[in-house]
Image 1 (cartoon, rainbow, N blue to C red):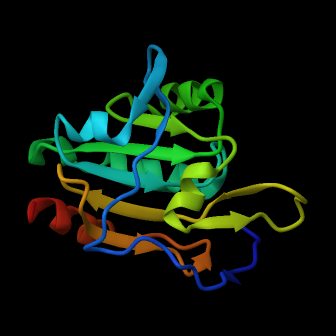
Image 2: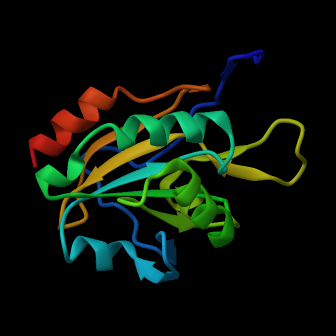
Length: 169
């Protein structure tokens, strides 16, 4: 692939040890979507919250392929994604990528990324922003136990580190 690696500006983002901001957005699965909050999910189990680029972009495709190869459910956690893509796009991505075990939050206005301090203006797209890639492992008390935020685009987390953080819950 032909693309430039871009250094992202520093971000004042949520860190490990801090409280994860709560939010409510449409949560999409392979059958339907409905509004859900982060605290709704945390009532059931810890959450791995994966901020990713819009559906169809190669970084999102790669991230979900990598996550699908892991068995996070054995640790009793939920893995959920969040991007600016619409519920319709998320539903199609879930079906096309075969990631029915995961659900994706839809946040077209990118408000949640702003709450987490990880908003990123897309080069060459005036007025369009998305979350920079980030992963948060959040316990039932909304404490961030692990945080990774991209410093470059494209950049991917160490998936083994995420799995280790989940094991430590």
